[in-house]
View 1: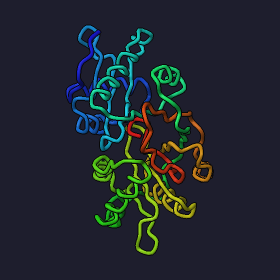
View 2 (view 1 turned 90 degrees about the vertical axis):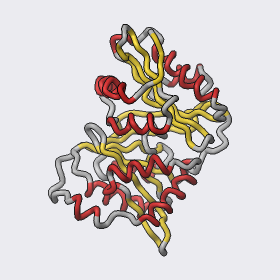
View 3 (view 1 turned 30 degrees about the vertical axis):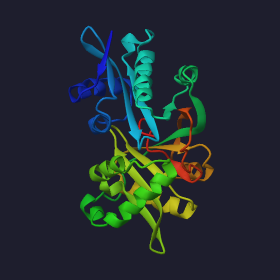
Length: 285
């Protein structure tokens, strides 16, 4: 086995591995990692074939994220996932990043704990399965109502407070790809709540989604579901936000699986997750 830096040419192999695992990421998501961290994404090769991946992304040098830890089922149980994770952590430690974060599945959590990661909070993946909306989705009509540049800038500032660091370039890329999913609740001329979304390989994915008022949460979720034409929608909801979880279930979402947000190092920039309804996703934070 050999570990090396991932390149754009490896995206096809990464897509193959995530398809085997039933994950929802697209080629655009892989490219987001490579654009943000060209030297911090790695693959494992056996006999010249990519059998594992890991990706990292740093946010303002405040903390970094580890995601896309994938191993071909034929090669699991050989420590490849551990080697990839150790490579990612070693790379980030060399950059002097003070904190490393990730969202762990129950299967991966014991490994991360052995490497010094601690639990920050719990996340629940909720999934909506539905028939296509009765009213046809008109993307052109919706785009005429897209958020103004000034509103988008206000959303990005607000997200920095919730998340703990600026990730504006990442969210702008989401807005460019799916502007119909960028939503804002405005009160007295100020952005009070917001929601983004992604078009995944088999589902539309809500997040990040933040709101301190259940009325705004309902408004944003209703708008998103009207604008989505997919029969599957995913939201990774904070378990502590019972209001958001209840609202999602009220709209037909059901529990899928748990995730645990974990960190290694000093968690000096935790953000404000009290009013965070849903994360961007376990791969990005």
